[in-house]
Every structure is written in structure tokens, then in C-alpha cells.
Image (cartoon, rainbow, N blue to C red):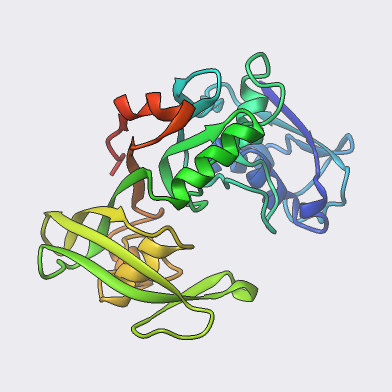
Length: 287
């Protein structure tokens, strides 16, 4: 058996035990967690506890998983004294949110305690359900330099995604405005300036056309949910996106996750991090 232990964080106070376990063990398959509950191998404060029991902050949770349920830590693709690039799995947040659970930095520190005395800090954001290349800093000065580089568009990101239908034309740069609704954690794309709305520019190229098309996407601006909301606004929502997309279409194609991966990072930097200009990081999506 594999034992996983943790304390319930404040952000998950009052949540069901099943929710707490999934948020705190994001790399463990749902089937393995269900199996542990069926076997009654999940304990809260030393007592076998059902999945719908409500938890309180500080409760000590022990989950006994079957052999083979251990999942590898996030893959580190590159590391130097200041930065690292990882392949962030879907289902892990870049920063603490209202849902609770481990952030990618905390997960890395937990998985590699000998390498990180403090959690590495994301230099940019990928949505919780988005996987792929993520750049993290090891110290605050480097983080500030990279955040400035992102603001100056000196870090170049590409994504691949699957969308409903085939966009026309096959290559385009889309311009619009994005209005954020923080209370509901959603955004709305509009076609004209409005107070509080931010301009967005999204470039896409069709790689493979069909009922479900594969796109390469480059962001010229980096806004919350930009790719998901912008493509949905022109009639081509991402496959697996129930927030902005077509749930019936997602079910028809058995899409149980968001089909969006950050696939490329390249740089045109100045100063002490200019050595990264000679590097390009790339990976293939899992879909």
C-alpha cells in the first residue's frame, strides 16, 4: 500500500472529504481515489471516514492507495540556478485559489525537497485545466525580471488545441475586448471598447481541419481564459471546455478534459537572462 498524508488547508474548510482528497492529491487518478474510499482506506483524524463527510481545517488525512496508483511528479524539462521549465499537468493551479489544494510550486517542493527549499514561483499562468510548458523562478528578483519580460512581450508562447468545427480563414489574427467577472470567475468577449474591458489579440493557424480541428495558437496578449473565450466567441469553442464551450459536443466526443496544451516557449530577452534567447522549449500535446 502507498500512504499519502496531509492536513486539510484553510481553503478547504467545510469541503467534502472526497473533494479534499482530489484537490490535495491532484496527480492520483480518480479511479485510485474511488477505490480507496470503497475499501474504506481513507481516514480523517485516525477514523475511517466516508467521502461525503465534511472536513475542518487542520484535520489529519491518511489515504492508503493500491500499488501502482503512485503518479510521477511533474516533469522538470530544464533547470538552472535561477529558473526551471516544467510540464504542468492538467488539474493543478499555478497559484492558490478558492478551491484550495496544492499549487504547482508547492507540488514541486513536495516532490523534490532536496532541490527546492521554497516553492518555485510561476512567471506566468496556465489555467488549472491547461497542461504544458510553465516557466518558474527560484527567487524574487528573477521572478520580477521575467514578469517584466512577459509584460514587454519578450517571452513567446504557443499552444495547441482542439476546437469544434474548422475556423475560416485557416490563419487569422483576432482582435476583441475581454470583460472579466471576478465574482463568477468567467470572462466575456465583446467587439468594442468598454470601460474595464481589456484588449485581446489571438492568432491561430489550422493544422488539421475537420469536425474537430487542431489549431496552433499564439497569444499576443495574455488575459484570463483568453484562448478559451476568444475562440468560443467566434463559434469554435475548445473541445472539453464546459465553461465556454458546447457540453453536448464534448460528451459526443467523450472529451473529459480541456484539449489545450502550452507547447512552446521562446525568448528575446535582455540583461542577465538573455542566455535564454538561445533556447527553445517545445513538447507535443497528449491529444
